[in-house]
Structures are given as structure tokens and as C-alpha cells.
Length: 69
Ligand SMILES: [Zn+2]
Image (cartoon, protein in one colour):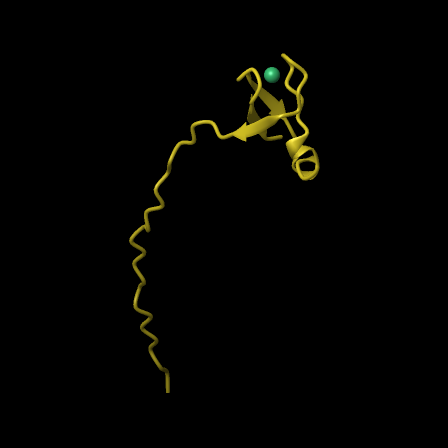
């Protein structure tokens, strides 16, 4: 289950919410702040490890087909 980080826009409290993917559609904007109980929270994205997609040098072996006659 993914762990989302939210921040309350009222008290600036940051908290983490465990949400399943199937539930994340509707309740995304209805996460209650555990501190003040407001639902005016926004999802913040924690630090992601930026992985640059490097294309590995894929060497295509030349297909030498020897024809038998
Ligand atoms: Zn709050």
C-alpha cells in the first residue's frame, strides 16, 4: 500500500496517510488533518529518489543466418 504524505493548510501539520490505490480516487481531497480535524489538506510528495533512466547500451548481435542448400 502506498504511503502518501499530506499537509494541512490550516495548521501546516504534515502527516502520512496509508491509502490503497483503489480508494485513492474519491478520498484524495477528503483526508482529515489529525491535528485540527480540517479536511483542507493537500497531498505533498515526499522526496523521491530521482532515478535517471539511462538507456543501457544494448548490443544487437548481428544475426548471421547460414543458408543450407
Ligand atoms: Zn490541521
